[in-house]
Length: 146
Image (cartoon, rainbow, N blue to C red; front, side, top):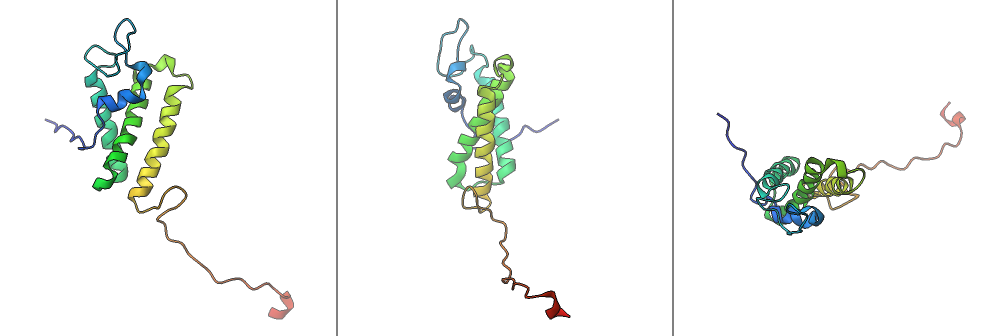
């Protein structure tokens, strides 16, 4: 028997994912409803499972998150979940469009979150050590070494 995976407390809600996919939250007949339900494609249950999986993926990438990063983590996971919903449920409509844009936003946001949680100070900086070496004196001539 398998143990169900634990959902991080900051996992995005289906409504957070719906906010990123407003053009996709429709019921049969094409009426916009603004939130995933039992009658939308995908359903609220399907979106929640995707959001759970992406939140666990974000948590693996970042490690345990301090409270100050949980809102950002939820936003990042919502982007990732929106990209997966787009790819999983609307694959024919994603020829260099919404999926690519969402996936790029997710990748960049996840990278910034990982950097921030590992001690970096933002984009372009790293927590890697910085080394310095003494200035090199110009060579006067190779004959000086003979």
